[in-house]
Amino acid sequence: MEHTVKVWEKTYTVQVHQKSKAVWEAVGDYEGKDIQVKSRTSGAALRLWVDAARFPWKPPLH
Image 1 (spheres, one colour):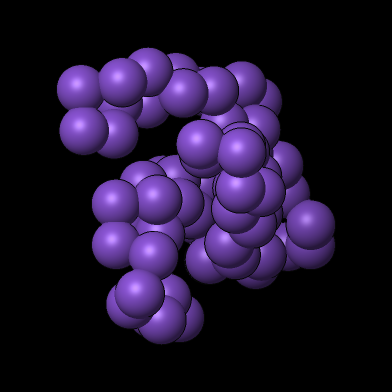
Image 2 (tube, one colour; image 1 turned 135 degrees about the horizontal axis):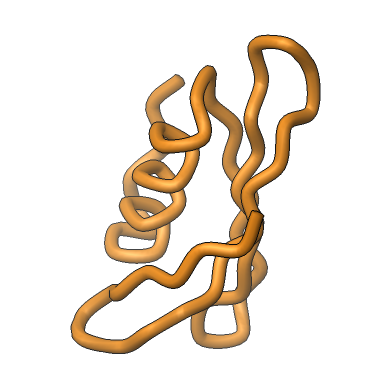
């Protein structure tokens, strides 16, 4: 599924897909950097992607 998110007032496109029964992955490009995160739900994966884009120095929570 393709989602549109805002990070620091800019719009980005993020792909979210189900890897297995309990694993969702969000993938997208942020300012030339490829960001890929996984979580238990599609919404949680999308939120983690936004957090990873906003705060690249913080390790993602699982």
